[in-house]
Amino acid sequence: MKKIILFFFLTITIFSGVLRAQDSITFPNGSFEQWTTHPGYNVTVLFMPIPVFDSFSTPSNWDYPSYPVNESISLMGMNININTSVPIVKATPENGVVPDGNKAVKLHTIMLDDIINPTVLSLAGDLLDSTLTQQAIPSILSTGAVDINAFIPLISDLMSGSGDIYSMLPTLLTMDVNDYISGGIALDGFKPGRLTGSYKYHSATSGDNGGVVILGTHYNNTTHRREIVGGGISLDLTDADSYTPFETEYIPLGAFMPDMPNTSPDSLIVILLSSAGTNMQQGSYLCIDDLMLWPAPDTCASIQYLTLTNQAYDAPPMMVLEWYSNPIPDHWEIEYGPHGFQIGNGTIVETNTPYFSIYDLEDANMLQPNTLYTFYIRSVCGDSTYGDWDSISYRTPCATVGELTVNSNSESIVFTIDNKVSGLSISWTDTTDTQRWGVYYGIYSPYFPDNWGTFVVVDTPYYEFPPLSPGKTYTVEVTAHCSDDNYGEPKLISFSTPKPEGIYAPTTSHSKNQINVYPNPAKGLCNVVINGNQPAELRLYSVDGQIIQNIYTDGSPVVLALPWHGLFFLQATTDSGTSTQKIINQ
Image (cartoon, rainbow, N blue to C red; front, side, top):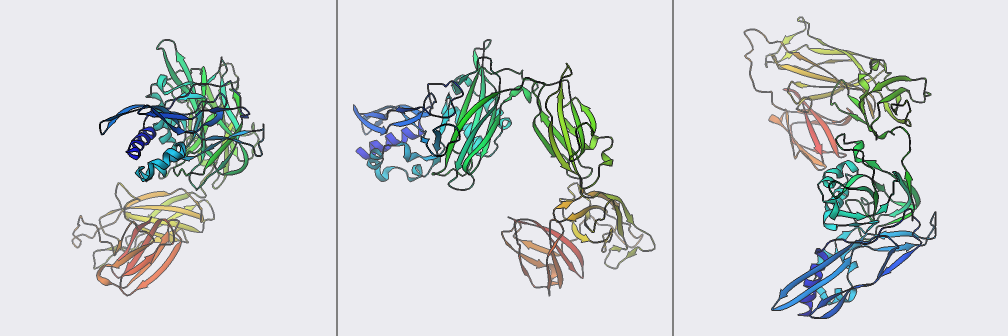
């Protein structure tokens, strides 16, 4: 009976409750010199107090998470009342080499049995579900009170690897912040700009890492509600044997949400996570020291989260610069030139939007191929003041394929007896001394080049097609290969093959593949069956056009070994023609 009662008590204790805390700190207090010991907890079962958790310590004036439990259950006619709280923080002073101060805080990733008194755990024996002792969770230490039930979706978002304030917005904006979080650092008009500190992290296994979350809150006197108005995240606190600096920028939500006012926070919540990865393991820990909060610069708006993305999948390219600024200035100024140029000697353009396409530049076609360019961006305010420059670099494609020309001289066209047309070829020019090109072609479809097609690598700017189907529209994509990891932008052209009058009856069916590959996707090995058991030459290409294997078969099935994960092209040539099939190796 005792074991059954304890089992129910432990189960409810672990899975019930709300995370609560009481105090906030005056910031900065980053050296964690002062520690407070908290008493353990008891649970009352039939008027008998049973210890649940031994005493523990946390940095003074830092909140700690706990599960409050107030449950009443009936078991075999007996009423059992449980009214207690179980902490889920495991923090210890770090006395090693600390850069600033005598102690740092050390947060341990724990398992659930770490929070239960060993005596109580041993009494429960094998009645306790073994999975409960194998579930690792991060320790959470905060300067503000956090509701764990509301915080769990946010933690799940962080663990999934999203790791930025933007991905958290849907969760943050739909929560009742009054219940979600409170307390924190009273700012009293101070405008936060960034949080810095030093960290040391030990990962018990690859894939997990430490994390720091800051959230700005503001009490709305009109709605009488506390709102989240900004924040920032650093989840890249990876394995480090010695203390390493880190920085987390505070970004107002209004900086990237035009319909949201730029509200200054009146309090700031700092949350430390002992693990923020997808593979949390007991034995991982995060040491934090020397936390300092810095003010936002009192200048024209800064450039934040400057990124470069390719927003197109074929030619012409759409390389786009994007950024955020708060507050939004009158406009932004961009100056660019070859990497290493001196500011003032580059080309200057202006934009009224926080994004800019490189290939919208009037002289974009004059950018040199295979050249690293640097783009500087700064804000321009109404009083002709400027923000600080931020920069990003972009290497132009290694080579640009010039005009594609399909050669279809009627004198070279031959219609074969198997209803094919030969004598077609394609040629092109190139802006550099490229020695190799990839040619990918197939019957036109809305999904080309992701549909079936043929891929070949040539060492001259010319390719003669094998016999093709007459009366069809083909699409050809040519890409320069300057080196194994440096390619040009693809260039496409479409053309229609002729059909002989009175000889060829057009058909809507596509020519069959020469081979059958299974399984596809593969896992290291796949089987290749030659249709009709014809003798064939098989060529396996990497995605950059390198020939990996060249196999001749008398028509017998072939077991093909794939050397690494990713996409491959398998080209088969038989007396019936040539075809190519994509193979994915997982």
